[in-house]
Amino acid sequence: MEGFNSPWQLSLASLATIFVELSIIYWIVYVTYNICFHPLANIPGPFIWRATRLAYVRSFLAGTIVTDVRKLHETYGDVVRVAPDEVSFARGDVWVDAFGRNPLPRNATFFKTPPGQPDNLVMTSDISANARMRHLISPAFTERSLTRQEPTIHSYADLLIDGLSKRIRFAGPATNEAVINTVDWFNWFAFDLVGELAFGESFESLRDTRHHPWVMVIFGSIKVMAFAAMTRYYYGVESFLQCLIPPGIRRMQREHYAIAHDKITRRMAANDDKDDFVRPLLRGNPNFEKMSLPEVESTMAIMIIAGSETTATALCGITHCLVQNPDQLRRLEAEIRGHFGKEDEVTIRAVQNLPFLNAVILEGLRMCHPVAGGLLRRVPKAGATICGYYLPGHTHVLISTAAMSLSETKFHRASEFIPDRFFSDDTRPAEFDGDQRNSQKPFGVGPRSCIGKSFALAELRIALARLIWRFDISKPPGKQVNWNRLRTLVVVEKKDINITIREVRRETEK
Image 1: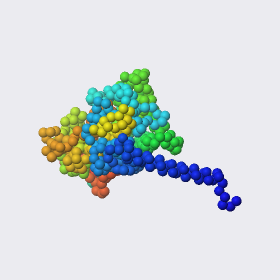
Image 2: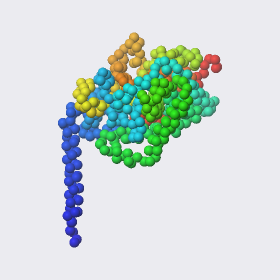
Image 3: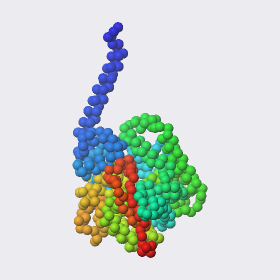
Image 4: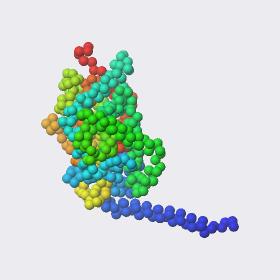
């Protein structure tokens, strides 16, 4: 009969209405609780960030989380609530409270190995597993090991410098200069070097002047991992989205692990005494009873990123700052060229004591932190007091390194590249005496600090000293990159960051 509504149709309509009404009520209650009654309700922050995590997730996936959180700290202070259950800290005492005697564990919501892959040193949130693996691999990063690894570092620095010289010759003898993309060259250098030390073989990127396909796979998988991490903040969503991952992405992840397996297998089969990262894993773990073979493979695979991408980013950032500040660049040139008469005099021991070079590196790490997204931790079930704030169990904690580094309240003339601020007390200009230099921990602190700190610093010093000794570098014509506007999705998404290089003409060549 026309116009007649069956009981079944009415019940469907009623159910839909009830569902909508319950959803609205749920969100009203949820938001009201988060804003007014949540244990973190007394911590300041913008309404939308305190009400739901959606603002945080949107900012993270857009790659603007670093700049957005910095702005929140500028508006709301050193302690800001950036999600209903997450607090961001930009105070120096957070290093003691969060990483001191009872360090906060890593945020297991964010740090999680992909499904089907074994745990590893870098990604594990298990404190005991990290300690077990770290103890086994730490002999590869002692000062004694670094001394043995020095020839390898120099061999890849040679390839870098020689490759840049060839690029100048290719550009034409008339100009004796070339414009190079530091993102490419420093990535090739860092990945080749760490590939040699982690797998016993280079990616040959410097030789071929192109990215190895596996490296590109790694960068792609990082974005997938970041997206997956955001889904874990919502119960049940990750399992659902795992089913929607395209077959090509799954294949890429399997290939990544398979390549690591093959490389490690070849390295172990060589059975030699190479001074690399694998050597202590073989000597102290002969039957893989302390660290399983899958854990070794997974750790070496992830260290390709952890041990190279960060160094490449730091080199890009430091050289970018130098060409933007010619006066500081001239001072570095004078120190390096005045100290070394020949290029082969540049050694790890020799560059350790160059005050301006070391200050340049520290200032570069302050302004262009390679782990700009900060450090993610989670409060244990019993709760913890951080910077005077009691946080209930399971609260997410963000240590915002960028907000501390670029804060005008912590650093005088914070937006300027001034290496002098990191001079010793007796040589530092008085205007920087109030700088909170102790808030800067580019390699972290505590049991989860960067195990390769000495190696990374040696790599930075050698590469920069060799670059400055051989070439005059300068800012190329055209539009320049604004470092602080680069997107960050776990790692800094660096666009082309170009510099002009020109061979230094010395008296013996004239």
